[in-house]
Image (cartoon, rainbow, N blue to C red; front, side):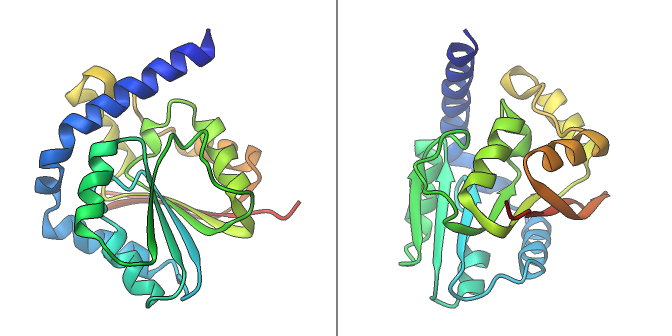
Length: 209
């Protein structure tokens, strides 16, 4: 039953974001882009890295990630929505980017193949956050980095989703205590936690087995 419920929810989310795809980039105001660029620059991504952009959407982060790699390495742009991915692909043709349509809880990626996984604006939409974190941990190399980020505070984001209602009404960021616990249980060591009016940022490192 649980698997069937999760599958139905994933399909509903895919349809929801497919419908939003045509107008998604209208939300990309300069202030939001500046905040995202600042976050990416602070991640110290090096040429040659393999970066997983979880929930890439229309490829908002891709220009910043591409700039950090300087043509060396790989970016896996992963999203549940085919229409979001289509728009991302149309805007970003850099050879370092591969586009993958998949649910984060069941990706087609190999074990320990990624140096850094960035979940920008997507973590609340994971129906099974623990399972998603475990899957990301599987994909990351030992000492690989997990990033969860938003361009607003937890309270602002949760209020926004609840005001939108419908399928995203309960897509909420957990409180700090629960987030710390989930990250630890998935095998990560927390490096940085920040929750301010202009950004929410979690950085954690995968502990070697």
